[in-house]
Length: 129
Image (tube, rainbow, N blue to C red; front, side, top):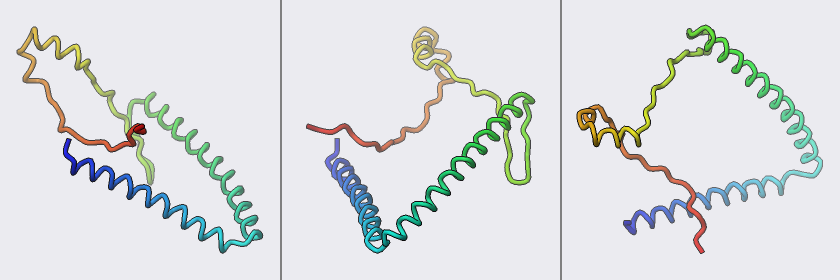
């Protein structure tokens, strides 16, 4: 593996840590200027809007489930003023592992095999000891 990739991954991790630290520093700066009285008022506002958020999230999830169920039942898309619920035919999938074995016995199917471009996912690596 190229050292330059490892160096860049380490630099990326450091930059992400800097961003997280900056967010914490920003919150600490805000906390220093917010008086206890204002903090109580902000907490009350947060609580008030949290309950409303939960109610709206529930209403949205319920309506989405109803719409999806109705569209699936009818088998047709529906369009409102701002949103559209698109009915889509189910995707066809194949058991690639089994077909690869099958293709060794039946090479005539190999031209029908398509393989996508490789791609990269960056995720947190396990801790090294």
